[in-house]
Length: 183
Image (cartoon, rainbow, N blue to C red; front, top):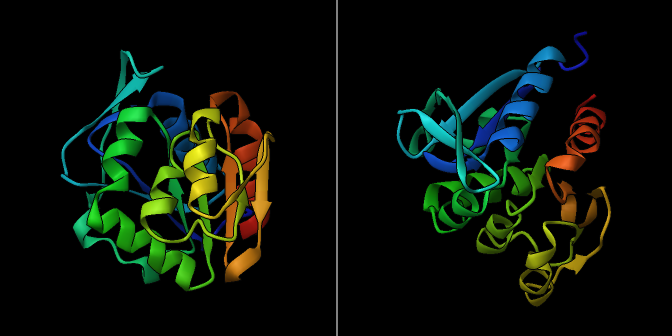
């Protein structure tokens, strides 16, 4: 399949603590759909994934440093979860810059599980309707978003498309919504 041929997608992560399936499954799926997928992390050294925030999973090799990534080079940014990953990404100025730039350009931002924490710190959560891991509900509501408990939520408000999901169990729906938004 090549529905996403010509589309450039950036997956952003820290170098430790990203939920294994939440980086691996979108990376594999989007490549299978023909997208050019780039992975960026603070350092160009292996990303240690974790299964359920506890057990080490496989490593993922980033293609470039977050500091080198430019929002204008991509059609979408994907923010995987993992509590440790998301907590690190939310305070990373380069991650904030990338997400704010993609949203500001009217492109697609996709975040799963704890990934929506970054939306708050990047200043793009207010006015959006979204989902996340349930423990983020208060944080997102306090940031001006409307939280819903859905497998995958697509919100076109505020000039950009936001796709969110709750947990690794929602990855099939999450991936399908990214495909639909970029097709």
